[in-house]
Picture 1: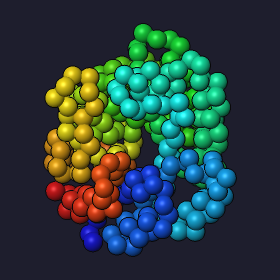
Picture 2 (picture 1 turned 120 degrees about the vertical axis):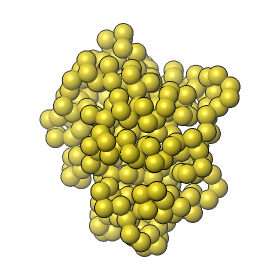
Picture 3 (picture 1 turned 180 degrees about the horizontal axis):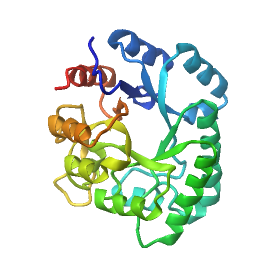
Picture 4 (picture 1 turned 30 degrees about the vertical axis):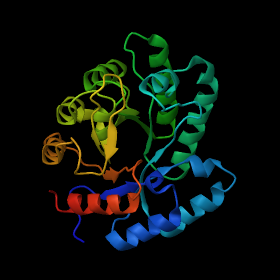
Length: 268
């Protein structure tokens, strides 16, 4: 299969539940070799075996990813309260958790660590100070933290990044999240955030017709992301990273991912 020469195509490991056998099967069938690696299994009792197998496979790791134990994604309201580093009662634990993830990312020789920081409030100095604390720690290990898009508008995120102006902060752009959270047009968002985008999730979605309700994730190419315009916006803004397919819903993720690879490899 001829892949996109400009941007490597890969997959988020959690899309296949971090199953290294299924990931290897996908790689063999499609010819891709890039992985956005979830660190959760690496922090488990089977962590060494997981990382040993990842290393044995020789895949190209574009970034690592973590989530936080307190997060509740059941509704938009619940994740607003529990997401990322926002909850005060979880901050000390989450700070140390991110420090550990930074250390692991650096030890693996990976440049980027990605996660949802939580809903941004540009008037909240406590949140900004927490982000700066984590970014300072990342910079010491030559790691860049990627802020996942979706939980705020592109304008809000751009204002936040401009204010902090931290070299260890950048963006993992997920067009599907913009739609799922009802936070604006992904193509326009790329144009606002282009200077900070270092990594891409390929995910599609349908917006909800009910205010403040989740949209619905769908296979790439069947939702509201304007694929040609989205890729053109990335190119126009000088994006030079990787396209990582993220599929977190559906009963046939393996085939959905293969379809996305085929679409991306043709550059639409």
